[in-house]
Each structure stands twice: as C-alpha cells, then as structure tokens.
Image (tube, rainbow, N blue to C red; front, top):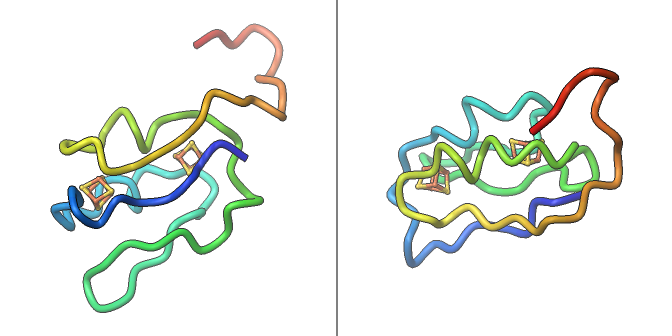
Length: 72
Ligand code: SF4
Ligand code: SF4
C-alpha cells in the first residue's frame, strides 16, 4: 500500500487519479475523490504522477514486486 490519502486543501477535483488507478483504489462521491480501498494499492505511483496539484499523497513503499521485466 502506497497511497496515503488526498490533501483536500490542494485537490482541484480533476478526477485524474480516479481515472488512471489500475486497481480502483479511489472512489468518487459528489465530485470528490476519496481513497476507497487502500489495501488494493499496488504502489505504481501513477496517481501522484498525473495529479496536477500534488494533492495525491503516496509513500515510497513497494510491498508488491513489479512483474518480471518491468522497471519504474
Ligand atoms: S499508487 Fe497506483 S495503485 Fe496505488 S492508488 Fe495510486 S494509481 Fe492506484
Ligand atoms: S488527481 Fe489530484 S487534484 Fe485531481 S482529483 Fe486526484 S488528488 Fe485531486
């Protein structure tokens, strides 16, 4: 699990993290993204990379190894 949460002081409600997450970690309610399933996070960091405001917080722990041949 890498995802830590969303800083709602910075979040601009673009939904990019919700759209790009391959594991459906995020949910959407009334236009606001929230962390729905943090244990499902595979630590890919895509959400943090696409977030335009630095609101999507992750840490650097990678509990699940990448598939063979994949590098970040
Ligand atoms: S790090 Fe990857 S799997 Fe985890 S919440 Fe972000 S996009 Fe989803
Ligand atoms: S990508 Fe960033 S700004 Fe956009 S909804 Fe997610 S946390 Fe908010």
